[in-house]
Amino acid sequence: MKQSFFKIYNKIKEDETLVSLNKGLFISFGGQILAFIFATLLHILFARAAGPSNYGIYAYASSWILLFALISKFGFGSALMRFIAAYEAKKDWALLKGIIIRSHQFSFSINLVFGSAIVIVFFLLKGETGLNITSVLIPAMFLGIAMTHLQLISSTLLGLRQVFLAKFISPVFRPVILSIVLGGFLLFPEKKVTGLDLIAFDAVATSLLVFVSAFFLYKKIPVIVRSTKAHFQSREWVSVTFPLFLLGLVQVAITQTDILMLGSLSGLKNAGIYNAVTKISFILTYMLISVNVVIAPLISRFYSLGEITKIKKIFRFIRILLATLSVPAAVALIIFSDLFLSVFGDDFSSGASALKIVVLGKLVSVIAGPVGFLYTMTDNHIIALKVFGFSAVLNIVLNYYFIKLWGINGAALASTITLIFWNVILITFSKKKFGCFI
Image (cartoon, rainbow, N blue to C red; front, side):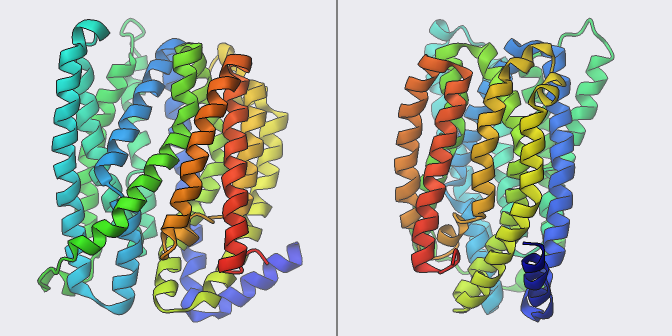
């Protein structure tokens, strides 16, 4: 494998059109490592200060905020990477400017409509839920809106191949700011930090980063775009973003179903412990994310130019790279699962078996590579939508029965089976359509 790795690496290095891949991977991996360290530190600080139950409240609320941001983006996150990379390759600056403007207009409109609907529903149900609208809903709404536009800007930067800015502004600086704020709070033990406090801190920090990232986007966008009159193809964009929106919806359903159903069926304490399990296992997911953000615009760029051979070449290299890095990390997580979870607190060690199960599924997904982007960055996103849609239903059914039978371990097993299932299916189709797994 070592010889094969360096052989493919040298071939890519000699290809002028792919030389930026190596630089992009280096920057992305560096950013993801820092993001993982700071994000994990943030969750450790909060978990140790608040305990499993209060930490579970934050994890539960965060899942709903993530869903809000996903709905508001309406598929423009992936679409921006896809279209901007293609427009830049073809130097179609009018459409490039148009989709940037339209994505934020469209998402902000959904923010207002969807957010207003949530406010009304919570206001009508406040007597039954016991929730305070001002302290709970308002910070969460601001956080959801800020996350939406920060993610859109990040996708635009990735489409423009500005990997450094995309992978450092939000993934690194956001948890750093929150860790500093939370660390300051922990200096005063008499002031108990709650899940709602962290949501409020997060909303302020994320809002500030929206303006910072927008400034850097303005500086990095080609100068000619600033003076070009925007051209809009809203109908064509929506025809692509809507399936991508549904795809993102089912993907979030797959990734968040375990925590949401565990919290509902087994209690928020177990949800908090399981959230710590997912945070630790994210060290493997971060490896895949590091690759995804670099390879996604390249897939779109080369596909739009009809250069499928280059997609196959870089994809093969990526799979070998991921296998080389992820296997040792997975083995360490399995062997020292108790030790890794104990940093969150003594109560969290009970999730060690769940961590081992989750790691196995993550390892399969990482070695499979960014197979989903072969579909979302080309004209084959409908295939991915069908596969993920079926997987989401399968995930809900398995979680419902497995959680009742085995609690945290059942949630881990259900999610692992689902993860392996959709990867195997997409790999099978990819082998026929692209030849990337030959």
